Length: 72
Image (cartoon, rainbow, N blue to C red; front, side, top):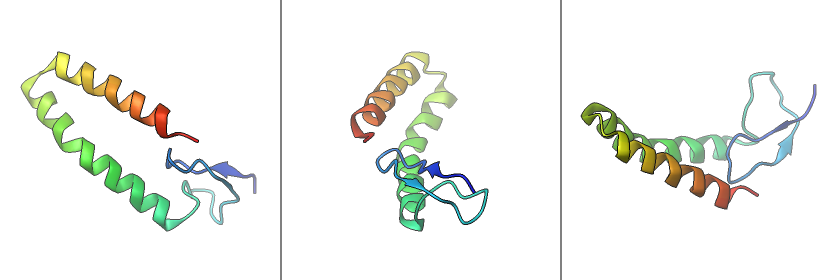
């Protein structure tokens, strides 16, 4: 099976998956990404419900910067 890159942006390790559906190199990376998404998801949903386009665009830019800064 071909190697993949871990989807947790703070890891990015290359690994050989034991199953073709495996997206993270370890269960810890999967959990860290889940916690990262959950922490940021609530505020985004609130902005969506309020139709706060400017807030959503600012949040998008902030998330993109955070990901870029923390990607190995």
